[in-house]
Length: 341
Image (cartoon, rainbow, N blue to C red; front, top):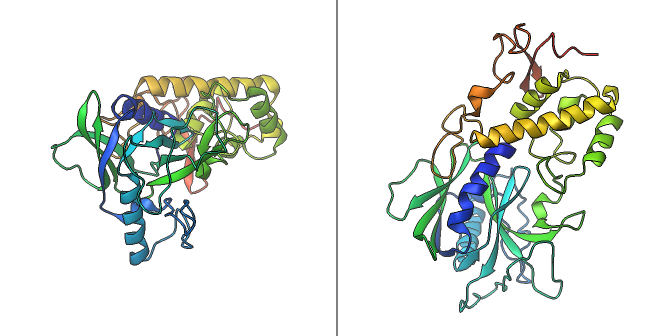
């Protein structure tokens, strides 16, 4: 699954091409990619069609209705700069100049960072979650089709001209949606309603170091499970949890309550270091499922010290890396450097 570095690479790649672009038209090829999208309700606002959100298998008719709603409402929107929280990414939108709202829709004002105007109608964003294999691909208007394209947006940018923005997803765990922007719990930003429960990540300038360290050390759960809790710290998945724990020399099953203040700070520093290095190397690609917006793979896989290296010597001490089962996945660590205490 794409984690913070991979989603951030995609966000940064999209920014120059989509900021200020207008959606000329949209095509939903597979409504299953709209699991998180909720069509307009009877009040003309985004609501619940009674069929549930992500993870729900939609009846055929409901999927067709969601596709039609998405295509109609996204066409004519002007895209703002992409933003991200953890593994969620979104593009705030506004209604294009001179574009009349279609029946049942609402005006969509551009969102200013951290300033929700309660006197205006709901402010919306195009929300993306890449799931296990989602890709956001920028292509020339007449480029050949990529595989597994589920949703296509034709966009026009003032400087770059006509482009295609394709959402491809082989395994269909990802999705696009139009979602309301709401004040974050700390009141600093506006974020999609579906991401309100997601904590900030360690690379976020507003990340609360002291709050995270305190919460980590108060809980008797294994530290790796804590790192994967997106309500505590976001953007960390299996790969980067293993890598940060290896760098900090902490066993994955060490309870948070057993981690001292110094060691907790080392772990947070390790998280930031591994994220920063992974970003510089374009993220981690083990197969063709994660690529950047140009279809290129990242190469951080060559820099991994623990994840996926079971049986290989630990780069620090030479003891073979081991793999143990963990929540239907695996934990990779050095039994010498990362002893359970």
